[in-house]
Length: 515
Image (cartoon, rainbow, N blue to C red):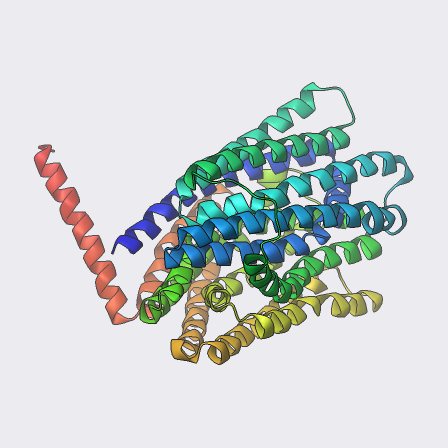
């Protein structure tokens, strides 16, 4: 019960953060697009993406850091926790150095020789690239601090810092319009300043949480080697995700130019905002999945995975369906001048996220086990296959939407693959039947709700009335169908009891206040 309350409390903090940051980020994206222009926005997206491409080194190690810190916390071993934290900092300093070297050699060569950028914009692009390298280094060093806060489930601190982060980015837009300098260079420099400030704040908060703590920059092989072993196998999977994202971005640049890169950036921005609805809930449940595994409470772990996947799916779908239906109106309302392909890119980009939401708790369980060799290889290969298939179809003259269609198909295959890998690694969890059942029931719910909402949606002309009607009907129809289709009798009884308890509390409150 205490764990459930903690999950709910942390989820609420994360949703407060999400509502604020999503609103600010969407608003600032519009202002950035207007201030920089479509071409400069596309240049920033593709140039900064070169550095992101090297981020697979950091992504793999951050996964290992989060897993080992949460695992040690679940076992209640503080001494080992502090050693793990210190070791992870050492490794992240090394990763920062590696990415700096790669960025100033291979990455710089790639940007100057392979990217399609106007000669008049090359000087600004080179400055953006250098600022992006330094920003990436700050982000890498920040990872262990972020991980220790989440492992301790201090989501309120995490939420406050991210709200402040979004506020600083909003302030950047004001400075862009005040200062008289190259907007593209100035924007990249100010983003660098924000990264430095946030890293310092995370460090201060983290040290207070685990105080007393003294960082030792040394090679503690008994802690580092298991982390490196985990991250080495995780490296391929994380590299594949980033390579797919930036590889498609570069293929679009190669075949269609920076204007399509701007549309790609908009689609990814929207996907990130929408993903936060379910990822916040899943972020709050992940430490509990890890801790249940560390303490051997498999039954509680399975129950949490099953319920969290359903609730996360509902939260994601509750936003995605009306957004997909009203995407044209929302994008024009948000951006005013919408880049070509931004509409269809955004709509198609949301579908794989919905599929992966059901998959996420299974990924948490696999990471908790520490046995990620087969998982990383299979899922990474599925992600990477988008690139050669996309290149083949582009050479054949197909539309830029091809990578998105491929991604949807491959994400379905990935869901099946993750289910099979989990069954192989943790047969005692007995989750494969649950996974299959969740997928079928979710599909039934999606089909039924889509038919109803699309029919009603087509009865109205585009505008505010249709947008509001679609959103309100989604809030009514999707939870209702989910209640009867997705949840079993036990969960339905708990939901009804929860609602009745709240109604009784409200009734007593009104009586006591003589209302």
